[in-house]
Image 1 (cartoon, rainbow, N blue to C red):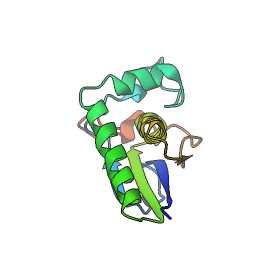
Image 2 (cartoon, rainbow, N blue to C red; image 1 turned 135 degrees about the vertical axis):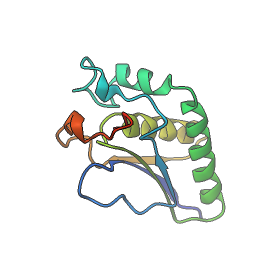
Image 3 (cartoon, rainbow, N blue to C red; image 1 turned 45 degrees about the vertical axis):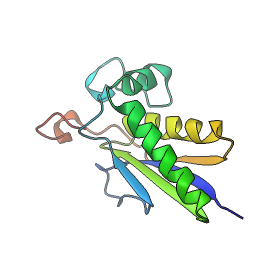
Image 4 (cartoon, rainbow, N blue to C red; image 1 turned 120 degrees about the vertical axis):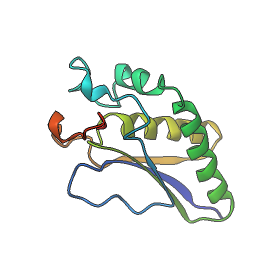
Amino acid sequence: MTGHIRIISFGYGHPDAPPMADLTVDTRRQLRNPHHDPIMRDLTGLDAAVRRHVLATPGATCVIDIAAAYALSMRAAGGQVVRVAIGCTGGRHRAVALAEAVAARVRAGGVPAEVVHRDVAKPLLPLTTHGAGGEQ
């Protein structure tokens, strides 16, 4: 019997190490960052406005497709628990939105997926900690 899929969102900017995973996706430099928009800053990737903002980034759908395909392939190969970790700097916006989207894609294929948002309830990181290149 095959196992299940666990998708974990997290923030690289917190002292906790990234979670152990079979696949880790780093969204810090490739996806639009809602943290820089004062209207979305206090929201999370669970909010529709943030989700739309992140998922409208060119390439976001491709990342979702690849992460979901990888998880489903590993599960089919007999993995007991397939873990996909998705990180951004704070673990509140991009990682959360993508984790939810990957889980929805997996579930649409009839496979159960568990989602854990490790850092979504942690305080916002200050804008100054987000790197010189505008990453968060």
